[in-house]
Image 1 (tube, rainbow, N blue to C red):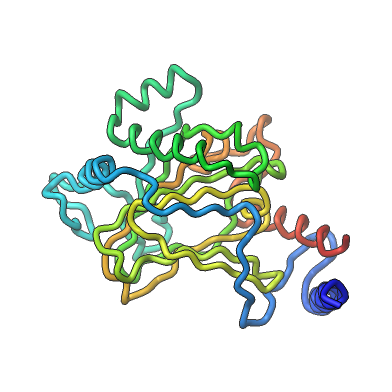
Image 2: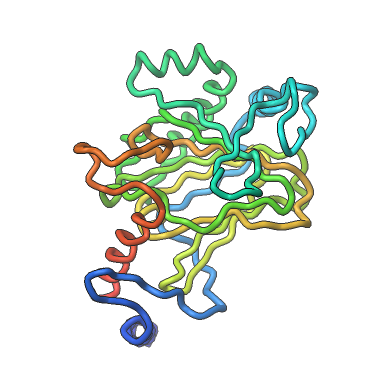
Length: 278
């Protein structure tokens, strides 16, 4: 009976998209009506207290060099040089920073010497992940922390829903590290599969490490929820292979996927439709 109900649900979903979505050459799948089901995506792994307090404290101070406290919305002298990641929006927050990309052993040594505590904390999280016997992320053995994008999330700041840049299926992997000075009401990071009517909100506590790949990377979007009741500042480190990182990516002969969230949506929707038809 349970299997039959799943088949009926799948058929109803397909009928919804036949009626409401564009299934021609330019595939676009509409969001399912809310409320959405809460369902954990395949390929998502969450670990609490995964970095040591010493490393956590030193890295927090790296991002708060003035006095270790939460800094100004617009960086002042002697504060961390956050940039406006989305300058096309006039009210964009100063919330972004990028480490640069460090490919191969020689460049990883440069990463270590340029940003010692930053490098050490990322490697500590990476080594922790390797001990966790994760079986739901294909090609995890190929993951190396070669690039780190950092965002700060103050109360009521957020990040819109998006797919990460398209990769060959089962090759995109992301590790997230969270620091927070007060997580009584933590920032919420939400994974969304809107065409299937699913979401999975994750409260991002201090010293938490998340790693995701497989379907969670290829078929799910993610967003940082704006919440005025969030009690502290969250610093989020997004760790990737250099070739998976979307920072300053341009289409070239070695990259068959057009960069950017709109292009990634087209690829994801094609893959989602293919799964719906199986």
